[in-house]
Image 1 (cartoon, rainbow, N blue to C red):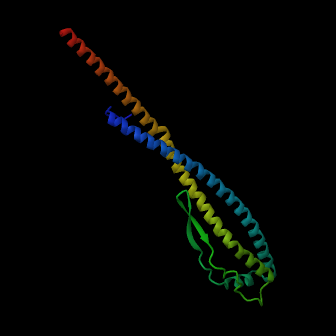
Image 2: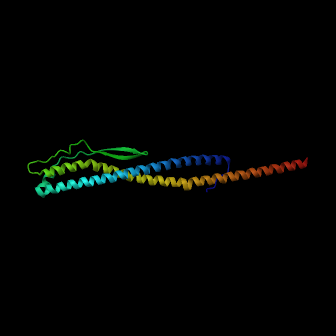
Image 3: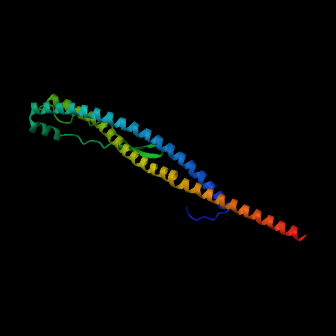
Length: 207
C-alpha cells in the first residue's frame, strides 16, 4: 500500500474511487460473460460453416475431376483461363459489445455466369464452375466469422486482465487504504479525547 495522508478528505476520496472501481469491475465482468457467450456462438457458427464448405468443396472438386477426365487437363485449363473479372466484395463492420467486427458481402452476382464457350467443354465443368461460384459467399462469411473469433478472443483476454487487476490489485489496495485511514483517524480521535479529558482534569484541579 502506498503511503497516504490519513485525513478525512483522503478517506472520502478513496471511498469514491473504490465505489467507481467496484462498478467498473461489475460492468467488465458482465462484458466478459457476454463476450464469452458471443464467442461460443461464433465458434459454433465457424464449425458449421467449415463442415458445409468442406462438403460442398468436395462435391465441386469431384465434378472438376470428372470434367478433367472428359476434356483433358490442357482443354480444362484453357477453358478456365477465360473468365470474367470477379467483382470485389463489399466490406463493412458490425458491432459486438462496442467492438467493431468485419462483415464481408459478395458483390451483385455476375460471377455466376459462365464466361467460357460451350463448344468444347463438358457439362461436368459447368456443374463444377457453378458449384465453386456458390461457395464464394460462404467463404467470405467464414473469413468474417474467423476474424471475429480472433478479435473476440483478444478482447476477452484484455478484459480478463482488467478484471483481474481490479479484483486482485486495485480494489484490495483501496480497501486496505480505507482501513488504514479509518484506524488512524480513530486513533487520532481517541488521542484527542484523552488530551481533552486530561486538560479538563488539570483545569478542575486548579479551581
